[in-house]
Length: 70
Image (cartoon, rainbow, N blue to C red):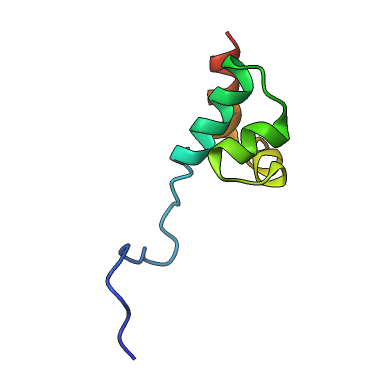
């Protein structure tokens, strides 16, 4: 069975780039700039509050959140 066209597969052992997704960026901006709570920011971005909570444990997301707070 052939794979569908999409993102190319990384070779085994290659580093994974953990970047900020556009939805997560929207959620963090909603948290910081508009002062919304986690549930409202998640709904605006199309995520769940748990997804934001788990994402904030990752370094790139945490760094973006802290830079937006400044």
